[in-house]
Image 1 (cartoon, rainbow, N blue to C red):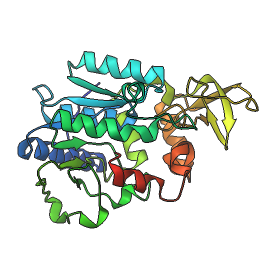
Image 2: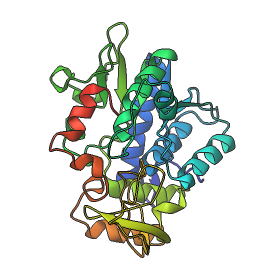
Image 3: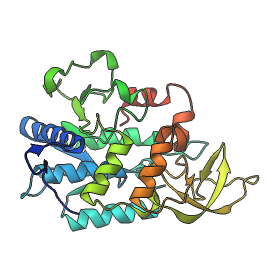
Length: 310
């Protein structure tokens, strides 16, 4: 994982590329949180956005260690490759990892399995409990405004009340990149350093910084079955049904989440450059093309965010 300078040197002067500008903004946000709030935590799922966010956070505090822990809400239906990647990164960089397990909540009756097998919506309660238990007052998330219309409403510093709930009408203006992390007792702030990034920005930055990712982001052979126009992976979550035939296809994943609702794309993009070329031609957002949970209703994401979701 290579760290580069935040400026691109030319023969005559020093100019910042658009990636340098995005990087500088994100690093400033991360340092602002560390300097003004007491107990931050960084959400780390092992996906590409959280990998970039962790890279930026480590860069912000070099040569020191990351001064706050990372948190993963484990649905129990994660892709094995992603969990393996998460644990490898945590060990390599000597990070403090907190894990909230959805399975624990199902086992003791605090949560109930959904009929569709998806545990993605079940992450909210374990997340809020982890925030309360560890008294986190700032939670870094990898959300970007280009992902989905509800996330486009989000501020960089997004207030949550004492119940972890979000009200888009109560967000503060952020003029001139001035951020206000003050919150009521019991509440906290969600912080999104990648707000102004696009999916292509993320991939160009991954290429420039040589950030390793789980292998499922690149073309590979996998057994999948078709459901509602999406190629889903078989698993303990309840797929496939009797009328759904498992096939072996050449696929990759554009986003990573619960196996029950994360669709694979048929793709031959096996390198970062090929992925960038493929995304450049796409006219569908990554969540729109590969996340079944966002298709439940027109306001699915906003409804979940109001309840305390990422």
